[in-house]
Length: 401
Figure 1: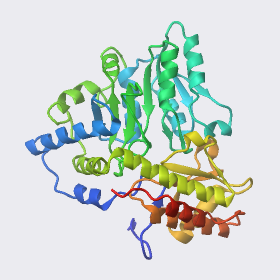
Figure 2: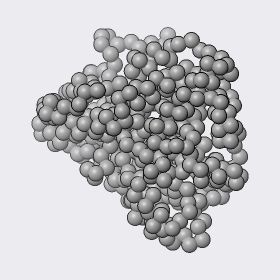
Figure 3: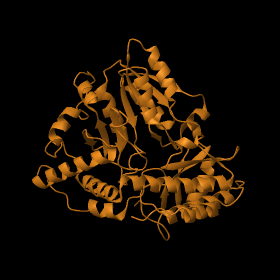
Figure 4: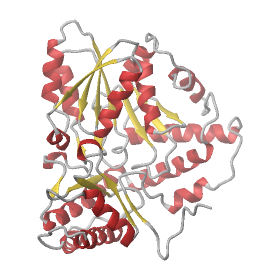
């Protein structure tokens, strides 16, 4: 029998950038007995969490919840707003932007992929000026949507979505703006309404601190209007039936009842702490981890300090060092899981997640495991990142809540 929770002693350190460690408070909520998803108790739960989730997306409009991974929410965003053969403009910032592009192709959409060249392009964010220039060329408005990733989980780059909205407006273009913040939501500041986003895509297993299995589309009035005119085949993903059922707190099919218990608890935790405090906490953790990387004499994957992610940090290995071999040593010797490099960055870097059920000591232990593992792997380090992070956290306390 496969043993999924067997460790000689202590707890496994899950420091990948999602799925993130789930707090005990959420696990307890999920363990409550399953109730009738057509009964009055469930309707009350649905109305409550549908209202609270808007506050996390910072929207007054509906947030549609699917029993699915973030990939499902990608598809839902595309099939509800576009028709077969429609042109969309996407920007390549990393592995997940690339997968979304691949999905668009498979759905019969015609995506145009803007990018910066090579591996270095995966170390920077969305270039709003390139989007504006391309939209100005599209005088006939054949481009129906702009698709970008807010926090690229494969690279640790958080792009400026407000700048993308300004670029669209400056070009005077009517295209919809679709944004993936699967790893950014509830860890990095995100403002659906203020930034003029038409569809925001997210998932449960990152900043919301839940297991995988729930995904989201936050939708604008413009997006809802577009969904009534598009001809893409859709049934499970169709917004109209979900929005209608949600008016009374229900879904048109069986929702993930116990995961919704957990979501309701996660929303309470986030809103009790206050989103501004949540974001400051993640920014502080990220800064401490980057101090460690700097002390090691290594490079952060993201090249622009203004775009450093508060969710994860990519650590680039020196030339000739296989990052996956280093990760393997760290996992086997210290029971610590780190994110691997994906796509163009495979073997070049590893990723440290600082989200979910985490605190200063979690990260101190993580950095200690990284430092010891890299030393065992023969990676030349300039100094102690562990000491640098300890000093940073000690000198930069976060106000208690």
